[in-house]
Amino acid sequence: MKEIVPQPPAMVHNETAEIQALFQQYVVPTYGRFDLVLSHGSGSQLWDVAGKRYLDLGGGIAVCALGHAPAAITETLIEQSRKLIHTSNFYYHAPQGRLAQALVNLIGPGKCFFANSGAEANEGMFKLARKFGHDEGRFEIITAINSFHGRTLAGIAATGQDKVKKGFEPMVPGFRHVPFNDLAAMREAISPATAAILIEGIQGEGGVTPATPEYLLGLRQLCDEKKLLLFMDGVQCGHFRTGRFQSYQRILENVSGGEKFIPDAISMAKSLGGGYPIGAFWVRQPYADLLGAGSHGSTYGGSPLACAVALKILSIIEQEKLADNAREVGAYMKSGLEQLAAKYPGVIVNVRGLGLMIGIELAPNIPAFSGEGKSAAVRFTNLLHAAGLLAVPTATHIIRFLPALNLRRSEADEGLKIVSSVVEKLSS
Ligand SMILES: *Cc1c(COP(=O)(O)O)cnc(C)c1O
Image (cartoon, rainbow, N blue to C red):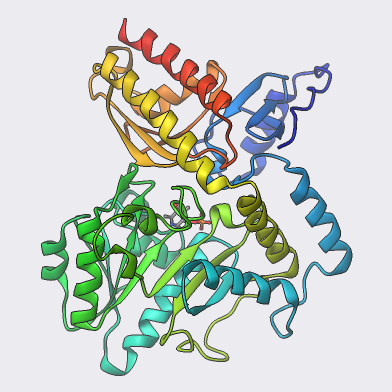
């Protein structure tokens, strides 16, 4: 791992205000952004334009698998861009073929389709379900309440949260939602039009809620019985974040019958490219050739540059045993947070997650957060920022830690110290 680079000399003028003004004037305001203007990073360290340092435990929302500016990825970007950046999918090239092979080797017999984002990876799976059910008039996909599947029109229809749909009705038809981890509700919801079920192994935006082993095994059985496809959205919880390549592998570890579990398709993005945009879905045999020539596509999807980066990330994860690191440092962080929750139950009521996907649930009535205004999660995150730590708020009262997979134990310690200082202040 790379050492921390010294920060550049302090800016002589106020770049923060200047850059924020550009956004106000020229960028469509779809995001509630924090008051931070970032400049550069190294590993899990980040600096803003004023020279303040942050420990980044948000990882760009589970994207920066190797942290910021990893030297090996910079090298790969330079090397591959000297050969080929883009070809279109009219032609063959080595990086896409090799990456598909690597992903199949990690999951099981099947094939991959490449896109550029998580939403697009899911779109591909939606089309797969439509194609699968088409001749029988089946088209419906059942998803979970509190799920998140992306911001495209079908993505928001698939997402089990009203807030993402509001104002964009009518929804793309064919999606219904049932409570997560409730097998009976899923069974009940299946209609003659149902073609597939889609869930996250660990709900991310919904608040870091893992599927139970019984739920996963039950859904597989249900899908087999009703001839439905079982899709898993591994965009956030996948790519070794839990200590295994996919979260279901971790959830089903040491569970009887768990080793035989396999979904029919899995979507990926986020950590797959470590910050370079790439998405993908894997689909198992015998469904791997359902989407034939001309049925789906993407101009950029699986470009030589994106695939070379993704391959390099996979090889570094393996070389540096980052799956084990995610498991160990994640368990260490989680136990530290659990101790904090035990000491300050008036601030933290629950700690959830696996590996380096951890959520803390804030108490509903923290006095400092009473009154009108932003959610407790956003206000807590602002306090973390002030104390030099980046984390990702979600729902109204959950703080997520989704750091780089190469996070060091010393960095976890620093993070725990900062979180403790904020929690301590809130409890007094
Ligand atoms: C982030 C995310 C998506 C959407 O990915 P984009 O790259 O933003 O389109 C889909 N599903 C899950 C579970 C996610 O966390």
